[in-house]
Every structure is written in C-alpha cells, then in structure tokens.
Image (cartoon, rainbow, N blue to C red; front, side):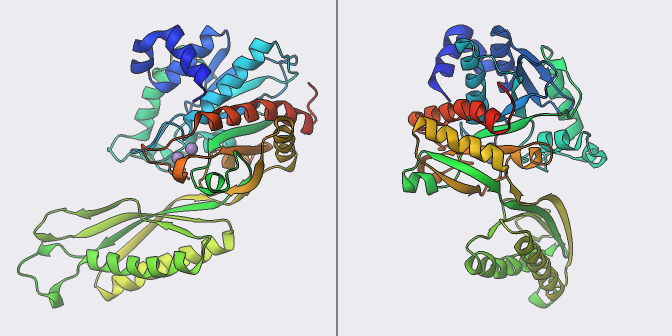
Length: 400
Ligand code: GLV
Ligand code: MN
Ligand code: MN
C-alpha cells in the first residue's frame, strides 16, 4: 500500500474507522472526502470517478480487487486498488485535466475461494448480465451467493447505483507478481503481455461407506483409494512432463468424515493452468481419464463438473506500448511476462484494450499471510500506474 495513502487514512479517518470499516466502505469514504463520485453496480463492483473534459466519453479504468484468500496477504488485489486511488488523487492534486474520465474499480470476488467461480465481478461486467446459474451458487460456508451479494450491496448505501456493464476506453491493473521471477532477476517492473488459461473441476468419487475394522479388502469400495491412486498418477505426470503446466488440489473432503468409517464419497477441487488451450484440453482429458479408470478399478463412480474455464488471454499491443513508454519515462528496468495467476483483466479483455503491471513480492510468496512487497516496489508500481495511465491514453489515441 502506498505509504501516503496509509498516512492519509490514519490522519483523516482515525484508527477506529480503519479497523472497523469493510475495505470497500473505507475506500468509498476516502473517495467521497476527496469529492469523487462513488458508484456500485448490481455485482457490487465499486467505481470511483474523476471526470474528464468529455463527460460522455467512456471512462478509462484502473484498479484491481479487495477480496482475499483464507490465508491471503495484504497486497494481492489491495495494492492495485489503492495504487489506483493514489493515481486519482495525484491527478487531482496536480490539477491534471484528462479528456477522458478516469475511474478506479474494485472488482467483486476475484479470488473465488468462498464462492466459485473467481473473477465474478469482471466476468458479469464483460457479459453485461448475471448468469442465471449463479443464483444457486453456495459458498464454502453454505451461504447463498445471492444473499451475500445483497448484503454487500446494502453495506454501501453511500454509493450511487449503476447498470452492469458499460463502454470503457481501456483498463490497466497493477498487481504483485505472485511468483519469484522479478525478485530473482532484480527487476522492479513486469509488463504483462497476457494471462495463462485456468480450469477448475469439482470431482466427486462415490464408493460405499462401511466399517473400518470389519471390512476386508475384497469387500471395500473405498473412494479414498480411488482418489489417491488417481492423484498419485497425475502428480507423477502432469507437471513433471511439462514445465508450463500447473496442477493443484486445494480442497478435499471425505464423507461422512468419521475416523472409523470407510468414506462413502470423497470430493476434491482441481485447479489446472497452462498458457496454451490445446495443452489445457489434453491435461483436462488426462485428469478425467485418471479418475474414471481409478474409480472403475475400485468399484466406485465418479462425477466431474467444470466450474470455471478461462481461456488464455493476450493483452493489447497499444496498452502494452503505453506501459513500455512509461517504464522508459521513469527509467525503471522492466521485462515482459505472462501472468501465471488469473486476474480480472482477463475478462475485461473481452470488452476493452487492457494490460497489467507487476511488481516483485518477497520470495514470490502469495495467497499466504507472509506475502510482502518492499515499499520501494509499491511506490515504483504506483508511479508506473500513474505514468502508464497518461501514456496509454496517448497510445490509445485518446486526446488528453
Ligand atoms: C487468482 O488469485 C488465481 O488463483 O490465479
Ligand atoms: Mn489478485
Ligand atoms: Mn489472488
């Protein structure tokens, strides 16, 4: 978080507000105090607007997300959102008039860890509607997504309501790398040229619950055995055979979950990533085949649902050029890179020119409370976001 924002927060709002207010409400409060207009749409995406000369021109969006992971740190999402607000304040302080309105955005539920899929806010924004199937989504705590959404919207009465999905001129997001390459190479800025693809599967293997002490091997239909042998095979092949592939089982549960009962079923999530769609197809087929074969071998049945499918997304040449120019103007060393994590920019890519800026994080660690960004890198990233916003408006040929 840029330190000037931290200082201003502490000075102008006092400790009580900082501790007790939800992040979107705190940001909205800070924005209103600066005289910016605050909006939220039906997905609870939050927008903070600074007008341009041409009030009718589609705004240029900068921002990220404010939700986090169960073991999330302070920077994944928050850095890009607060840096964008810092950019808005700096434009205001410096009296810079842009032709185009600039808006800070905080997208809803980027992480998808409580309610899947991830990036719901930007996905619905890019679709212009809320998919019907989302009404039945339940969180990991059993809460219906629709109820949590209504509560989130109601918690921000200061925001003006806005329709979902509207024309925008472009999008820029600052984020931590969430991997070690910038730190290892001692490069402060990553210019992101695209995001690799992600697929999420929910697998349930059903067998037969039975007594742990009395049931001989020949009579067991144990889904845990089916799952572990499929996973063993996948762990031994998918990533060892392809450096660019990622396979993660982040959640697994056995039912009924009793120490002395063979489980009746085992459910797990599978997160697959790859920069190439063809390879993602092959790996997904490999996962399906592994569970089907293993379930059949152990007298079990398998059910596999795909809950998330994000194709790899390249970013826009004109926006990347603007970011390259900004790095040149600021004299900051940079390198081009593909993002291993998914981001809202991936969905925004469907409706507007976009790119991202990465800064290093310590030991490449993220989705972990120890996540840390050197203040010097937060500042460089925020300066890059500021300069890139101005330079990208030029490369997009939007007159300033
Ligand atoms: C987003 O946080 C991701 O899982 O890539
Ligand atoms: Mn993030
Ligand atoms: Mn994340």
